[in-house]
Length: 392
Ligand SMILES: *Cc1c(COP(=O)(O)O)cnc(C)c1O
Image 1 (cartoon, helix red, strand yellow):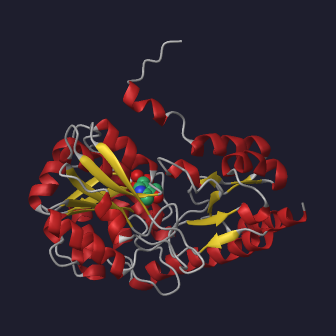
Image 2 (cartoon, helix red, strand yellow):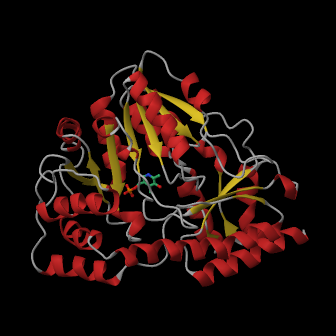
Image 3 (cartoon, protein in one colour):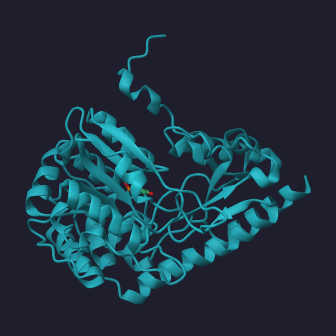
């Protein structure tokens, strides 16, 4: 059979997430693989979308997004982080964070430019970098160990992947798939290196409201010397449990936003008209509503993790996001890909092997990512099923 796909995209075939979701459906297993919530977010945000459709907001919105949403994004940035963006020149609404990230990479990276990504890496970054004919340069987060309780970005590791072709650093915090929230010390490292080497930084902050145990999100754009070199990306999908709406945004300097708008306009032009109105209302919710969303996700984490511990796994702490990583080696399993294919039969649960987030999975073959963005009763059931693994 002829493979019509250009060679550089051939390693991006059907994602493991689609395969595992299909497996979960086929076996009737609990799907803790793909990271989508099984309940809707705040009812007032859902109602705002219904109202927007009924009141006729159903045609192409303006290219940069409707003015009330751009204003709401700017107000949210000012209110939560003290960041001042002009809604007319420094904010761009996109088809989710995915389009924002892809448009930014296509706008900023040329043939042979090198892009540093934290590894494990969210899959769309690498695909976008390859589409731009640029080159991904992964820097692996150090794993939790006996001496360290969390993942950690090491300064020497970051410096070691830099070359004279390095153009951009992509930073995701809170981090998918590990659930790590980069500390101020780690963000200091990125800022220091970016300023020293005059690099642009693309930040993926889609989990900005889902941090646990009293942590607070601090955008890298607030660091000295970073505002003018940072392209900040976020999205409403994860915050409001509306991943199907695909409303994301970019905030940066007028020059960088104009650059990203140039590529973005030929990817989708615009999207999600009525949902833009709803997200504008959602971003203006009072602080305690955002705190509730984070607290609820933390409670869901705390339903699942005991099941993983009872199963005998070594659980890496999840500090934010929808996800937790666990090591199955203590259970006597060493190949997480094989383990995840068998997990529906072993105990009626689906998860994804962390190796899919690495260019070279040496040393991470026994790590598994579990999603806890599910209803409490589903997580309780999953935890019970997983705990039963230790009896085998
Ligand atoms: C879900 C996710 C995205 C994609 O966000 P959309 O708004 O759905 O496009 C981007 N980055 C990370 C880390 C994610 O987990």
